[in-house]
Length: 410
Image (cartoon, rainbow, N blue to C red; front, side, top):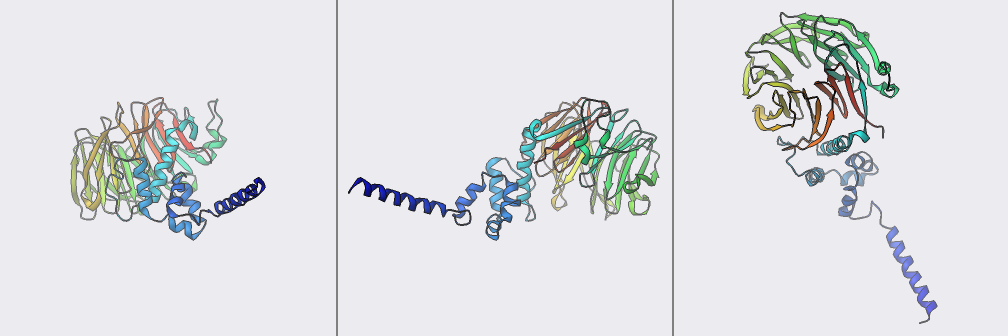
């Protein structure tokens, strides 16, 4: 065979091979190869973008086992720590784990950081993100309540004492006559509590005008709300219940604790309170009696209750996971966070556990068994609390400042 014929035959074969290669498309390749390609892509992109291209792609990524295995392959430690039921959203969990890891592991390059130095004239004891992450409220020992527009963070310029002014929406001077200790919200209503014994309700849509209040004989240290029930923990060891629908009308109280009540959570069934008496009390609000009491070696200082888990931070830098499923409220495991001070705030999500401390740091931990530290965020003074919404974090600081971390725009 002549060299010319061999060359023509080779060209024909190469063309046929190229034709076959071009026939390999995402919608025709085997499922195993499709999923292998997806494993190199962000879960968020696969689920929210690729999965919306056609019915075939959508159907291929529906099996929860795919996302469960993806998480366990990258992070083999037990997750979630409380047994996941059929309602557990493995797709959302996978997205959150990857997003929180990506953002916080290299937060200096993936997050925008803002320091509102001197945001108040005294120590800031509480921050609270609300209105779907668009707004933040802060309360201070200067008795002042401030409202911040987080949508205007891009207008902030560093380098001057007034660099945060573009974000400052409203100032309520002397909102209380004592230190503002806690802030929560429901809809367009903001609630604040103080050492002056007052719980106040503010209408955010009407320039934060005061619409109701209730006065107690002791400092109000903690608040929590769920639909028709607002609960307050007070310095005189009581848990007081109010109806936010009718001007914070008093509807009952219990005094199981032997020392001040420092932290609160509430849902449709239970009121959960932590106290300096080293207990967390689970009170059945329907039956009107104590359901159970959890005893600790050091007193609890903060609670985070969502996603079927109850996390508790204590005075010695430990965090404790309580399993509330089937109303059993049993301690699953306890971990030392690495903090050398008190845990002043705890926020957990599907993607991370975030703790703040009097040791002047914030720690971002994995939300699994024996969690590793993803990141340590520095503060200037003692960090008195944190508020988290999606991937935006706002901290309160004893140096009169507010710190904000928010993802860079993609």
